[in-house]
Amino acid sequence: MQNKSFPINYFNSVLTPVKNFIGRKQLSWPKLLFVILFLNGIMMIPIVINFTQTEAIQLKSTFPAIYDLIDEDVVDSLNQTTSEKGQVTFTEPFILEKEAGIVLGGVDEQEIEEALEMTNALVFAEDRFYLKEGDLPVSEITYTADVQLNGWQTVDDLQAEINRQWFQYNRVFIVATYSFMITGMLLMMNLLLVFGAAFFIRLAGRSAMIEINTYKESVNLILNAMGIPVLLAFLLGLVMPDISMIMSVQTFGLVVMLVLIYFRTQFSEDYVAKRKREASSHRGGA
Image 1 (cartoon, helix red, strand yellow):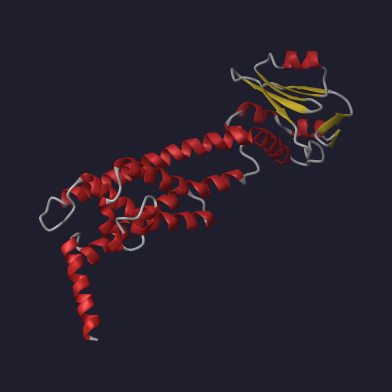
Image 2 (image 1 turned 180 degrees about the horizontal axis):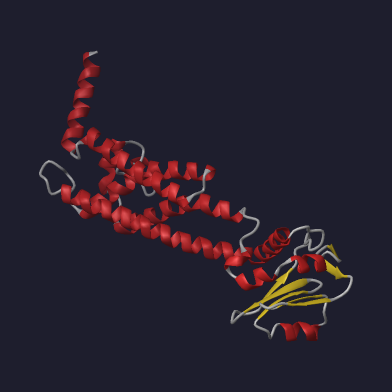
C-alpha cells in the first residue's frame, strides 16, 4: 500500500479502519493540505449545486426601501404594459411620488437621470429597470427574455418577479460571492476540526501503548478517517443541501471512524500484526 502513488495511496487508506491507521505515515504536509482542500471542495458541491438552481433571492435584504416602494399603485401602473422578448411597452408613462421615494415607468432619458439623483428611486424603462437607494450605486438591470411586469394581481407577485429579474441579472456574481464565503467558512471549520482532533490524538500518542509518533501522523490519520464521512455527507447533501447537516454528518462520522479505528487497531501496529497472525492461524487450522 505504501508504494502506491498519491492520490491513490490516500484513497486506499480511507477504505477501512485498519487502513486508516496503517496509512497514517504516507502523506507529506503539502499533500495533507491538498487533501483538506479536496475534501472541503467535495462538501461544497451540494451547496453550490443547490444555489445555482435558485431562481430568485430576496431583494429586500439589499434594497429594503426600494422593495417597500412596490405597492398596489405600482402594480396597477405596470398592468398597463405589455412584455415581449425582453421588451416592455408602456401604454402611457407614469410617475408615482411616495414618501420614501419615487417610481417611474416609460419616461424619457432626462426624467430617468433626474429620478436617479433622488435618494430612493425605482425606474422601469423599455429594456431595463434601475434601482437607486441611499448612497448605494445605481443598479441597472436588463430584463430577461421572459420578463412579465403586467398581469400580476398582488404586490407580492410583482415583488417576486422583480426579485427574479434582479437575481437572474446578478446570478453569476451572487453565486460566486456566496460560494466563496461558504467555502471559506467551511474550510475554517474543517481546519479547526482536523488540526484540533489531531492535537488530541497526538496527546494520546504520548502513551507508550499508542504508536502515533508525530503530529503529522495524527493529521494524516484524521484525514484518512474523514474520507468515508465526507463521502456520506456529500451524498446526503445532494438530497438535503444544508451546510449544518453536512458538517454534522462529517463530524459524527469522524467520531465513529475513530472509535472503529481504536477497536480494530488499538492504535498499535503490533496489535494489527497480532490480529493478522491470529486470523492466518485460524484459516490454516480450518
